[in-house]
Image (tube, rainbow, N blue to C red; front, side):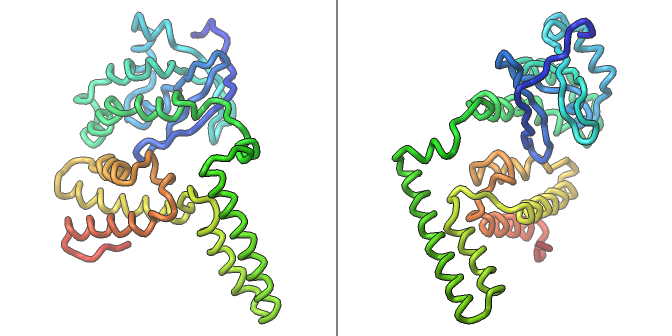
Length: 265
């Protein structure tokens, strides 16, 4: 790899994976690359040893590539990457029985599902160039019609609320009502807010910790997995805002079932 010129990607994305954040980049030829060192850090394995293993492997050593990746902190730097199609080959070379006990289940989870989650985010069209939103609004699909209807209702509601505020002099109160109304009548695919996402994350951690106390295993990934399957999402940050209360109630009931006590959230 040292003799190769580092690639400069045309796009970079972060992907949520059971509470972890993975980086992947799109190369000029359409190949998706995944930096390996951050994954080693998440799995608690020695990077220098894994790098030597990659270079010894007759297949992985031919595929390894230096890519300029933007990190925080650190900025732009060259990182050792493998093509997405070969990341599973690297992961299956890690012996889950030789990592720390508390990380064994996480290693197995990565070996089983990491490629699928990255492939869904980067191969199935979501990393490729997409039409502009304004261009999409020129179509006449049912979704576009619904969006235009909601937009018209939002505009009408805004004008009515501002008129009421002028008449009553209670502008601050009406602005709050306006924000709530726009959240309801706006984009129907709106996700939870950062504050709501944080509440969900804390609730998941509370349930996972109690389960781990009972089972002696790391239950963190399992709780996220159950929530993702129940609500049909790949990240808690992608939960529809309309499902927030349902998700919190579901996690609260789960907590009460395993602790026989009131939930703290």
